[in-house]
Image (tube, rainbow, N blue to C red; front, side, top):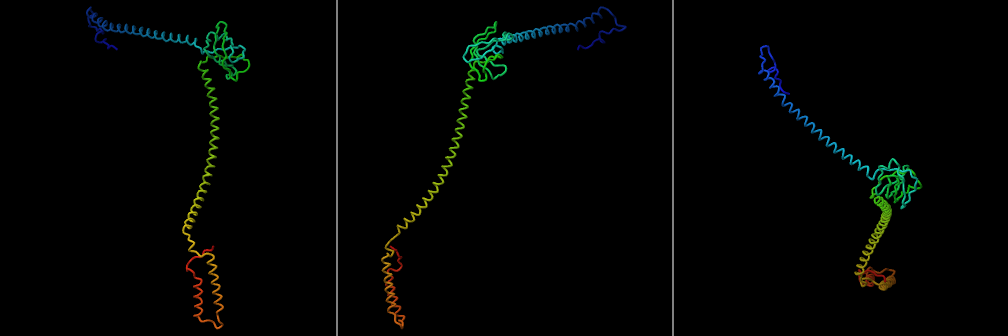
Length: 296
């Protein structure tokens, strides 16, 4: 705000002289203070007008873009249509539906479309666009795929655009489901094989245990055989009496005992005679002292 100069310049006292100089001084001061303000006001108004012009220009550009986009949207091939034509859809057949009058203006079918019943969305068909007469509303198409749920004749059709790649996606989905079923079957088979392998592994482990026991028994038998072989290597028949030799020795002993008894007198022999007899008997039966007896 501009400072006030009323008390310094514009207040008139009783003794102040009113003349041209006094009045001109005050009017000049007013002019000097008002002129810049008027310039600022003019600049502000010009700026405001410029801003309004820019806003209007931008708004027009935005509105124009929206208008063009709206026109483009109305021409896109995804807007929904409907029909009450009674029809049974058959795959690979060229067929036609009459689009409802209130939907014809915006109905612009693309290369492919999906036709479903309003009562059951799972009852649908994929169709290929052939041509459309906007005046009569007749839409000609070729039915490509009919879902399992779509059977019989219907008259409550809802129509929507469908991307051409969706058909390929549906085919890939079918292939994927088939591969999934195969994978599940393979998984079940693999599980059965795994159980069989586990059973065989248990049997192999049992056989291995039996084999280990047999190996240990064989090792024990081999050890016993080795010991027998070692004993056989140290066997010398010359160090043993034969059965014939034993029989001869026993016969000699019997003869000596008979002689000893027969020679005894009632008065009894002296100890010297008895000792002599025993010495003869010992010499007759001793053979080779310390030799073991081998019965053959």
